[in-house]
Amino acid sequence: MKLLKSDLFGQITLEQERGQAVVVRDSRSARWWLAWLARRLCRREARALARLDGLPGTPRLLAAEAGRLRRAWIEGRPMQIAMPRNPDYFRRARCLVAALHRLGVAHNDLAKEPNWLVTPIGAPALVDFQLATISARRGWLFRALAREDLRHLLKHKRLYCPKRLTARERHILATPALTSRLWMATGKPVYRFITCRLLGWADREGAGDRRF
Image 1 (tube, helix red, strand yellow):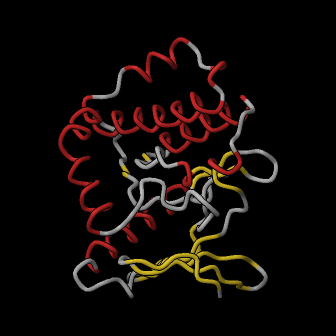
Image 2: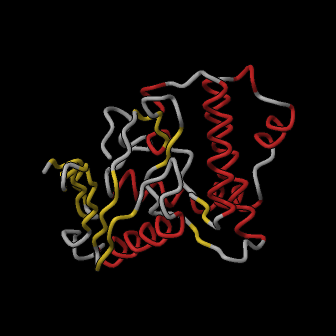
């Protein structure tokens, strides 16, 4: 067993089961005052992965129980390390995000480069679905969140492959959804205060070596 991460929300370990690499997220060791939130985030990730059901480019859920889940490891380097500049990576990444949305899952945390992987064959993959939203009806709120998923992907494309941005993609980048503008004006300052000042997180946590 290898400890990948340990914080106030529990721990993440990499284990070997029958020759297969397995990631275990365990919220049972979370601090007592955050235990309820840690369990909720763990359940949210489990539901999202179950809905995706092994979609290529996403982790396959192996098991989930109270406060704990096991998922398959995806081999790859985080985006900020791999720095993908091949336009095909971003074309495939957009197809992956669209596939998530068709299954009724919005990731909600695609602004973080560590959540994007570049596999050994140069394909995109996604991890960390703790903040994901699941919607069977895909109403207006889900569509707004899905658009933000796309916009965050395009931000990465603008950084690593700017010359291949289309006019429509530039328009999407320039027009964040109302939900995003409200979040930036109200929720984001509070979120940053709690995570950065109180919990000691960094905006690009995991931006060095891949953690999970």
